[in-house]
Image (tube, rainbow, N blue to C red; front, side, top):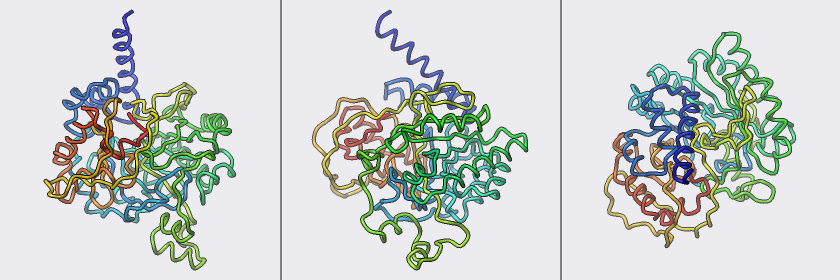
Length: 431
């Protein structure tokens, strides 16, 4: 059998698997399934251009505040401002997405969405507008019984819990300020209440990141959760993510970037009022303990050997595009370019010289992430907002998605000039 034929058959098989995985997330539209399959299984950007009339994934960062200090998470040390998306902006974005069934919707970004005071109302608005499927990503600490009932009432399609440990000791080393017992209790309560109602939704995915601090508990993690999940649920082992080179892993399995003072840590993890209460020695929030940090990491794909609720191996990931950690030399530090949605008279940013030989990254044809302040980044790995392609306060989702800034980035990737884009040059999460 010729090499080209072998590759073609492998691509066809991969496309079917991707469609199956995405269907498991609640996507039913046949055209959408075709777009996901072709985008993930083919290496041809010219074909992606013809399929990218709308993002495959839309994420709305309700907040970038966190209340855990996870050692591998860029959110704890963000340099960009902190804030919360207004309900008005959220509803406007949902209105623009309504009536479509050809994309995945993530009502969170770089932060724990349940910290938003209007989280429940925003989620209900999206569901009532017919947005489907909806995937929630959370650490699970704030998932009290009231929120469980709300999620079940709305029949949210799926939930992903990032836990990273079986023992309290390991968990607290990774998800600092967390409470594993509370997370496990909350997830089990969700599954129990779901069963009591006779519902299938939400499908639950339990994840652990494989790194030095967790490696010794991966097998027991898989075994523990396989026993507690239903046939529609899954367990995943995710590789360490550097967040486009922002959090390179050290020998202890921690991100190298970290705050240097206690004050900086507090400011990076909680809103100012909560930080002030902590500084005074009081509980930062009388209604809850110090909980919850989660990032928009739905692109972290399970590595081979992951197990779903039925005990079957599944190494294709949540959206099946087979993201791999390609080794790339980190580019020198440069100024962060901000690409405006409208023509700009600002000088061109300084780029790292040279060009690369790897193919175009599918992220530019797949993902649309709206940060809490309305800025749009072309990549869900862009924690600091380096790759801004527009602002939804000025332009619609469709205008930005089909605009000149994103087209320029795609063209640079197609011609091998991605090394001139600093964040892409240092990225290891190439898809």
